[in-house]
Length: 143
Figure 1 (tube, rainbow, N blue to C red):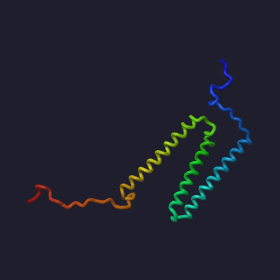
Figure 2: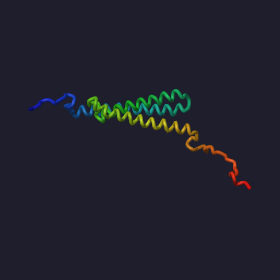
Figure 3: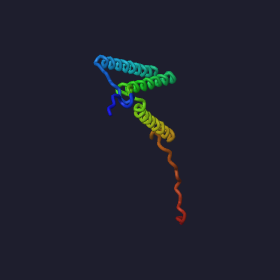
């Protein structure tokens, strides 16, 4: 028995790449990633210039930098790992463990900071409180 088509159209894709299309794609990806990186650097410079002026503005800029970094990570994953051309199930097998790994790191950092704060020694910079015990006489040792 001979089959002229694949079992599923989702499994096999015919890739046609010519040099012109490849160069345009690389140029486009490079420009987009460069622009996002420059915006992130400008946000960092704005935080430096603001100093301790407005905590809300600094927090908003940090949020913008986080969003831009996540967008850049998505874009890099889509193009350089070629996940933009893959089927949904394959993408999920890569993205879900990655998100779990990021969640583990965040959970450990938050838990560690909580433990440090509850310990209230500020990472050993303050001496831990000690208990003062008066010298006593052991029972039966009196003369």
